Image 1 (cartoon, each protein chain N blue to C red):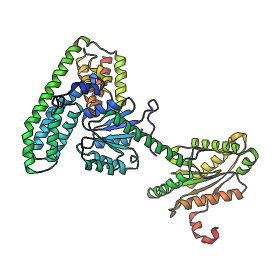
Image 2: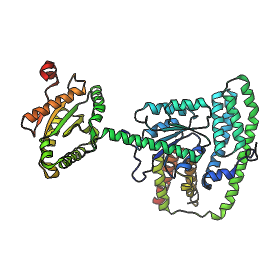
Image 3: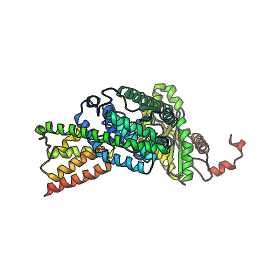
Image 4: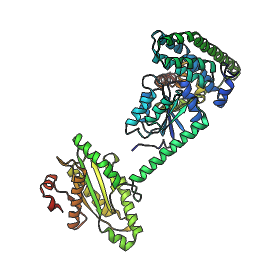
Amino acid sequence: MTAVTPTQSDTRPIILIVDDAPANVQILSLMFQRLYKIKVATSGTKCIEIANTPPQPNLILLDVLMPEMDGFETCKRLKMDNATSDIPIIFVTGLHEAHDEEQGLKLGAADYIRKPVREAVALARINTHITLHQQRKRLEELALHDQLTGLYNRHYLLEVAQQKVASAIRHNNELSLLMVDVDHFKQINDTHGHQTGDIVLSQLGDFLSNQHRKEDLISVRFGGEEFVILLENCNLEQARKRAEKLRSDIESMKPADLSITASIGVAALSEGETNFQSLLGRADKAVYKAKDNGRNCVILADDYSEEQSVPLLEKH
Amino acid sequence: MTKIENSVWDQATLSKRIYGNRVLLETLLRSFLNDKEGNIASLKSALEKEDYTQIRMTAHTIKGVASQLYSYRLQHVSEEIEQLSKQAKNNNIALIAELLPKFELEMNTLAEAFEAFLHSQKKTEKNNNDQSMTDSSLKQLLGEIEAKLIESEYIPPDSINILQKTHQSDELLHTLLTHLVEQINLFDNDAASATLKEINQHISIGKSA
């Protein structure tokens, strides 16, 4: 995910102006600085560097004819890189021929403004594209987050988890997964009402998101009262310890003044295991075992190799 | 061609367009003057080498700058050269070479007009030249500039213009501050950061002495 929020003290959207002629940059900056925070690059290379540095620009105004790397090439590279591909680009150029404009738009630019720039028209177009970009970001946020807890949702997990598995295999890193299921949650809803149930889940969500260092962990509300925590650079034993600590923390947290407990299944990516669904499935089975085991406990998943040796029919 | 389109530069429209921001106006004119010789040399050498890409690039840049400065005559001749350079035919080099004296004339005429304007501004400014900053406000401004340079953030010319008018009794500091302003206005951030470092060193030495 790319950061779109500018610095705390200055919340104006950021425009990156890219032009090799200082006079052009000065005039464009003066036009837009009242409404936007302005960053400046005088080459394509510098533009790419700034676009990759947080806080990222919300929009790039890009000149076409520049020495070394021209605007078309710069645009192409920005669009090819996942980290910068969704930043809207408007070409601002003295090239007035239709095929230049066509080329720019084909490369993925949002718009094309001709020099000399007329302020009112440029501002209207910039504003449109920044608004669209912000709305798209917001929709992405909504699509990938759980509304109640603010954690990522199942859709997000399924989107990124396979990449995490592939990356762990490629770099020979450990990857573990905890599946956390609140015990007797239906009873909480039935006895205290859904609103209380929501408070329990929401507080548990807050707890999970504050609990861990973000860079090696992704917390997800996977289903109704089910949470998944993906732990990067973490082996089975470390994951078990974290799960045990989490189980004990949940037992003492008392959301909505209720005593709750959770059953946790733990699985680590094993040799030869290349599919996220397999890892998830093993953790899920471990949760069932924890439930059978009297709940409020941590159970390690069966080995991947054992799973493989069980005939398919017996798994169900 | 209308009267305005035939003028060397339309100062009134440019001033209006930049909201009468005199510091920016002067910055733009100085930027043109700084680049003038290099641009002429670049066009001449590209012409000698029959390098159509370089001719096109230089002519396009000057056309762009001239149009931003409402300098119509230079804009037109640059545009003519740019158009000719788009098609790499043999006789086009000759046609571009024929336009070169006109191009140089327009560059020089515009430069003279800009210099005359800057000179007249200097005269009116003389009586109002005692803007000085305290050491602490200088340091604060330099700190803000440093942060903005790191972030590649735009620094408006009128926010740093005062640096050229303060601490004039310290000749070296004054020269460094003037360089800093010029480098920032031309977006040469690497040079500006190096100058800023020198200024900070100079200030700290001055303090300890």
